[in-house]
Amino acid sequence: MPHLPRLEVLPLHATLPVEEQTRVFAPAVRGVRRLIVATNIAETSVTLPHVRVVIDAGQVKEKHYANDKGMEVLSVVPISQSAATQRAGRAGRTAAGTVWRLYTEAQFKSMPAAPAPEIRRCNLANVVLGLKRMGLKELHAVDWLDPPEPAALRQAPLDTQWGRGLQKRRVAAS
Image (cartoon, rainbow, N blue to C red; front, side):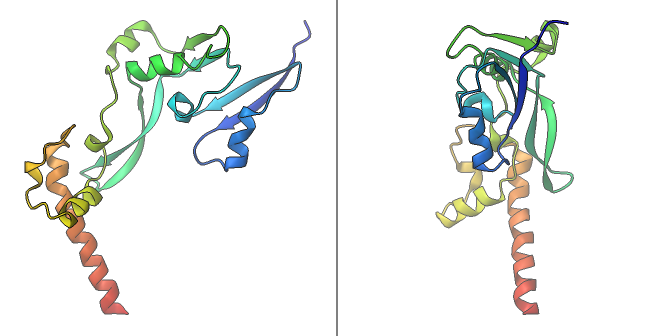
């Protein structure tokens, strides 16, 4: 068997302490290959020097609001075509690189062109509270850049009323 260089495996995700995240930016030891296992934090947030190969599983953990559960959930979902293109661009930023996609061309073509805007996926209770604080009375009158789902917009005031009810109970119990 031919001699293989030593391999250093480094994680990169948002919940890592900063000092551990910065390890991926330090120069590799001569003769040591690096494998950086990254979440979508490495998609757009940072440029990692000397990345030659990206292996794209075609999935992302994405937060969305489940109206039926009344809470935000984190689900593994297929990425969008634009995210796949962005991931491929991570290889070869400073030298020639390649991407290995762990999905077929047909799967790529079935992916949405772009991810859904966050406002269409998340709980709008805090948004509604902010708009109410600014004096806005009619939420449906807002000229949204990306309009939220109507059901989510209807649910948001109910969520804020539920939250106010909890606050009143806490005050009464004190």
